[in-house]
Amino acid sequence: MTASGRRAGVLAAAGALLAACVLGTTPSLAASDTGAAPVTADATVLPVQTTGPADKRFNIVVLGDGYTAAELPAFRADVEKHMNVLWSTEPFASYRSYINVWAVQTPSPESGVDCDPGLDAPRRDTVLDMGFWGGCNAGSVQRLLTMNSAKATALADLVPGTVGSNRQIVALANSTTYGGAGGTYATASGGNALSSLITPHEIGHSLGGLQDEYDYYARGVAGGTYEGGEPDSAHHTLLTEQQMKDQRAKWWRWLGDKSDSGGTIGRFEGGMYDTKGVWRPSRHSMMKTLGYAFDQVEREVMTQAISAKVDLIQDRTPGTAPIGADRSVWVDTMHPVGGALDVTWQLDGHAVRSAAGARGIDLRALHLRSGTHRLSATVTDPTPFVRDPAIRASGALTRTAAWTVDTSIRTQQAPAAAAFTDHTATTAPVGSSSVVYADTTHPATGRAPSVRWSLDGRQVHTRGNDRDLDLSALKLRPGTHTLRAGIAGSSDALTWTVDATVAEAAYALSEPLRTVRRHGKPTEYVYDGGFTMKLTATDDQQGYVVAQFRVDGDGWYTYYGWPTDASAPYRFTPGGTNIDNLVYGKLGRTRAVPWDDATPDYGTHTVEYRTVDPAGNVGPAKKFLVTLVKPKG
Image 1: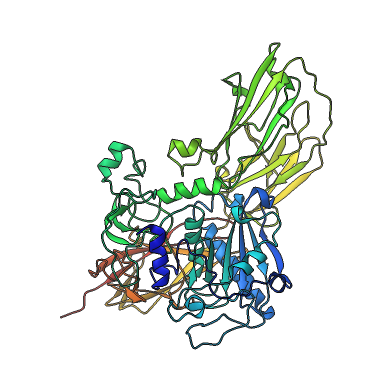
Image 2: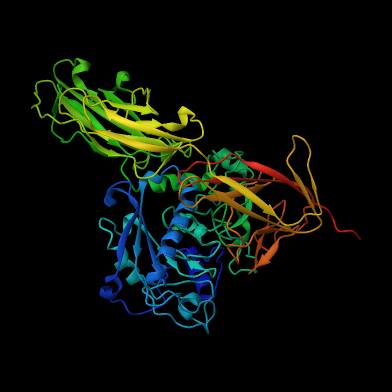
């Protein structure tokens, strides 16, 4: 059976939904009324994050269903939580500046959605006709949350400049019941503990073409043995590690690296709904277990996919006809939050070293010989997230602009007042490790305006590229700082607040048998069974703060409460807790499904915790120890 056929079978048989996710299915089964006028009549488009024109960005359009007019503040809070969890996840954190986010706010006549939580629950009068059980279908599954896709499209179309090819629709239901669906569109229950983790997973499918790494079809039923040929999937293989190295195939460049989702990149059996006969790069990643990061293999794919949605060269000296040697030539680039792009200038095939990194070049300074010359500017993303040279050289991460320069041509003077044309948004604090940018006007002749940076009143020097300022290089002290950008000879100026104070996290544990405190050592808590941990995060700035934890140095895991209750603490036990045939909270070596190793992990374990605030600041890890003692007898 083909992969798409399998997924259709999963849907029909209430199949494998780790995150209530079905890749390749459009959640549009709930209603037949496709009239566009009623659904758009009371809709309001709210820009949540605007980084540039919609037609030059990747756009996430978030819809809400079952939120009454009085409940719209709850919808906006759910959107904020979902997006801040997304921004805590790489590569979305580093490429946040490539993405616009829009919320389309539509009050529903009634609160809630259909068949929530059961088939005998009332039907609700809502904008998108969302419903559990695949739209109240007794042959479906409770957690399959569907909507009217035609109505969703009509609402998304209200955002100017967005079309199917440059946007991802995410619809949130006003519900705390676990559920969602994925594919072309994604749905999730807005108030469930796990719902904010569905969005990056679904974008992994729809944008990156990533496959599920589940080793089962239906929950509670182990998958079979894979019998096909070498998968097309970038993160599944039949090859051994040695074969990958010998053939330079699949993820051979990442083998042995510490995985961002825990452990090391290697070869782990199971994936694509089969338990045996196919292997994935890491023990658990976002495509297998919600809450973990993309591993490096998936992250490389997603970096290319996000970057492919934009043009690294946003603007340039115009024209295809030859230009004079007496003018200035320039490119305006994209500006990743995680690190500035590289720009290399070449003249007649040789690097112009004096212009290395600069976004513009004054041709008069080159003293060109008479005749015609070829000038080019190549913009490259040096991100460490990519190791494959083919991906690095692709249009997603490398773009070149070229001009023919003719020394016999004289450029007409066209004075341009020095001013800022584009910049990092000044309306919200920027993180202390962010790259902040400011683009300016470009004169036809003469030197381009110089951007001058200052922090707390003291000048910050830049070399080559003065359009981007990497704050991480400044190693800022904790606190709030003022960043300014000005232009020589102009009164035009920009001001940002820099948030260099990390959010704080605190933990609360259930009552231990005893507490052990040793000088210079983390506090140790001793239990003779399971225990609970609640993490709370506070910040000096507004916005939802993401808390994360990890056990014994494994991958960082987003804290969400407990799967059945976002306000409940997370529960750890020696063998884990089975909830709807998925396993949560096994202390020590993790379990995702009931057939994973259930050997209890007694002894002493290290629990670390940290925060990621709305500005992107990642707090230092703090830790405590937990010792589980074996029951007597």
